[in-house]
Image (tube, rainbow, N blue to C red; front, side, top):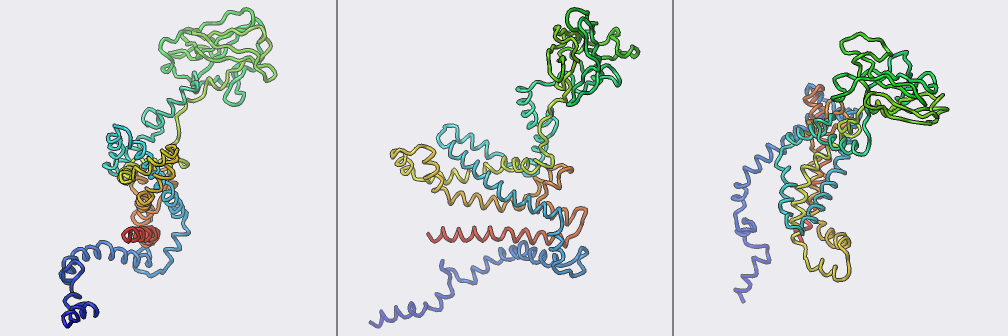
Length: 449
């Protein structure tokens, strides 16, 4: 009985003194602290001290010598550039993580059942091996306005030109005070009506002779006959000379130009010029004015202004998705491997289609993994800097601005005001803290399960 009482005594009183000096793993606390000391020193030097100094520096002026209190924070929220950066950062935080997670989920689910799924996942994940700087350079070239250089506009222009006819002679125009006059919308119309049995000359300039198609024939004067005839040609004589409005020797025909006969605002007949520039309209065109529609002269379609003020932020988010969708896919695929297949098979046996299985079983079971991916990407996009700095051109950098970039520009750019820059850094930290707190609480809840 005494032995039993002795055994119960220390446990009831909280344990022996030697037990209190040891951790759960049986290691003395001072030994554990000694091993943790280097990590704590590094944590203090690289995290705690910078945060404290940045907060302190945000309370001083540009030179760092005058205490200004919260004046720098007031400047931050009254500056248009910083407010634009704050708005764009909010767009990034809401849009980019959700889209990247959605793409990763789609990729992970669709490649689960195909034999070449591993190779596809490797290709999708490969951009993660590229730095943000390199990705920015790549997408700066991808989004080039010139279709001959930018891959995005090369695709857009190719699709556009497949379904829309390109103009025959972009930039062509009549001579001032000639027989043709501008008639609105980029078209040109003759000043006088064409009579039956007459040959009308429609001279144009503004087309470099070197850009005419190879083998372009010389222009020929149309022969008067039934209806209305005429010639469309480049009123420019190589080597100089020649008479304006007259077909001189060596002047080239403009083939494929559409000519419309217009009476009372209505097209009554139309024709297209031939290889020698001549065209022929029926007798119904007599007494009508001849019009060259704008479709003959429209500039070629050059695609989308991806890096313009309107689309620069979505374009950069697209570059981010190219890099980080693979990260989301790998994490979600790992979570998907742990989903019980019996639940999916039971649902299919009960009559559920694949969409119902995905929506009611796969996604709910993957919810913890999806939350991890979204939260991780939210923290990541809050400090996005280099991708925006490289991809956005100077003309639209203000519209693409984010908080991390504004911090750099305020501290080390033209402003060179580290007080305001430190204030932006503190604001950025405060925005990240709620996300980190949420993540820590979630991890603790999962650890207790």
